[in-house]
Amino acid sequence: MPKLIKNAILLGMGAVYYSKEKIELMVKDLSENENINPEEGKKMVKEIIEKAGEYKNEQEKELTKLVTKLIKDLGIATKEDIAKLKRDLGVTSKEEMAKLEKDLLKPNKKK
Image (cartoon, rainbow, N blue to C red; front, side, top):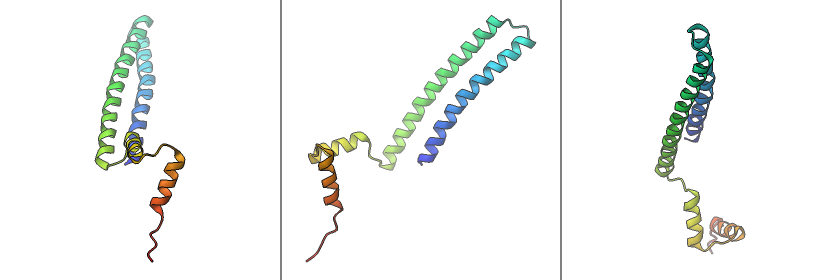
C-alpha cells in the first residue's frame, strides 16, 4: 500500500509541473499563431496556473483524506496513538521506552 500512495503523490506532483510547462507552450503557440498579444497570453497563463493551483490544493486535501482513511482502515498507529500509549504506560524517556521494549520482547523462561 505505501508504494501506491507514493506513486499517487508523485503522479500528482509531476502532473502539476508538466501542466505548467504545457500551458506556457500552448499560450506561446496561440500568441504566435492566433494573434493574441503577449499581455493577453501572460494573463491567460496566470489564470490557468491559478486554476491549476486551486485544483492541486483540492487534490492534496482529497489525498490527505484518503491516506488518513487508509491508515485508520489498516490499523496503523499514528504519532498521536504512540504518544498516548507512552503517556498511558508512564514512559517519559527514550531509555524507559527501550527498557520496556526489551522487557516485552524477552522470551519467557519456564522453570
